[in-house]
Length: 269
Image (cartoon, rainbow, N blue to C red; front, side):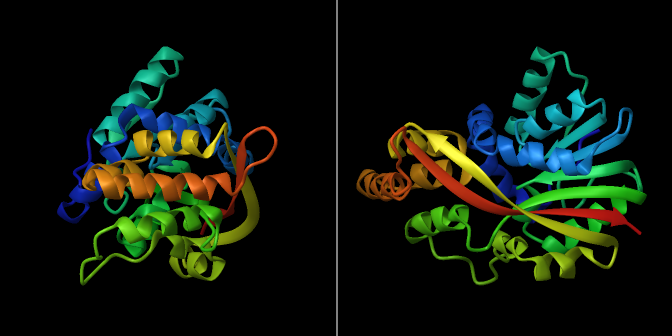
């Protein structure tokens, strides 16, 4: 079963598609926060767990190793293809599907738990995505979400890219970093979930700022697609600024960027 991607999300799907299998290196950079999320979700053997915005499947594989019966969904066909290949190589039985977070292809209450690691926050219509989270999670079920803080270093990385982006459309979707504040998370989820929060920091390590550029410009859809859209001179300027930002976190061994996030755990009422 494959869920349809809504028309207003086709462009977003293409952006995330652009990184393809190389997105795995991006997930490696948040592996510590993924472990944090799975720890707090505490999946039990045999539980039906949805990994929403699975990417290349890193979180889904961690869940599956805990014994959960996992379904991974992503808006990007290429990311899903990469997730399938990686799960197969590890002989993990995970069901991957293409799907839209704002209109999921599952029955009401289909899952005992739902996880999304820095994923659902990028849905263009957050109220619709939040409603779908509640719909597919059974009564008494759990959710665990990681979302970058609204003033995190990940947000600041996006601010490095912003001057190189085209002007936003008149009716631009809300910033994904709205999910970086607990008041906004409560607005979206508290009607259906009893919520608790824990703050965390993910440490992104690379040998150099240039290595960070190579990782993101190759595998991270927003950075990859932006770089591809620029002429050579502007692309080189973006590269310079991106490297300089990461070099601001240099230590004796390389660069290490602390990136702050909220972990939200909810129990479905």
